[in-house]
Length: 251
Ligand SMILES: O=C(O)[C@@H](O)C(=O)CO
Ligand SMILES: [Mg+2]
Image (cartoon, rainbow, N blue to C red):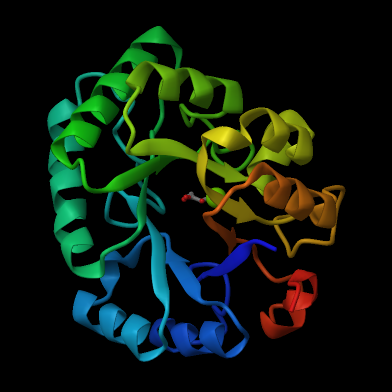
């Protein structure tokens, strides 16, 4: 059975941020991820991780939280200086928080120029920080209109062109189902590129078990593939109560 982590930006939001760590540990998670940990003093976040024996699995770049703003500059031609300064800032947080992975958001864009820019920026990043592992994640166009990385085949092309050992795919069952209509088939085609997995039902991004994705079959396929990373629960509990949403989680 996969190792499960909790996304504390979507789970346990009924609690204040720093209380979500112990809540996740109490129900059996041994790792957590936070999309944008930039608003909380790093020493407080670090203390919450250590006090609860939790691995810090992943955070997003760039800071700050993009809500209401641009979701990254990595694919925006002519914005290389902005991309680099954002990533230097990210890495200052990472030096303290020590995430296993950093998800680099592409931001908006389309076409060959955006692809070339994205590839060149990712190569710079991977070479500048060879000890850090990074991911890229396709996001569906309903949730993220105008976002450049909106397809798993495109992600495969980008990963092939970047060709660095510390950059891999972030597979999200919710986005895979929304983009390609087949989360399991997308895993079977692209799963070998993945360093990180996130799960949530489609189309409403609630807990696994609702909607068309067959999660027991997906978990078996993940196990059979030999994947050894984390599977992170990244969904909004349908009742608003995270504990009540955990029926999908094998004990
Ligand atoms: O799936 C998502 O939306 C996230 O993993 C993410 O990183 C977007 O902020
Ligand atoms: Mg995701």
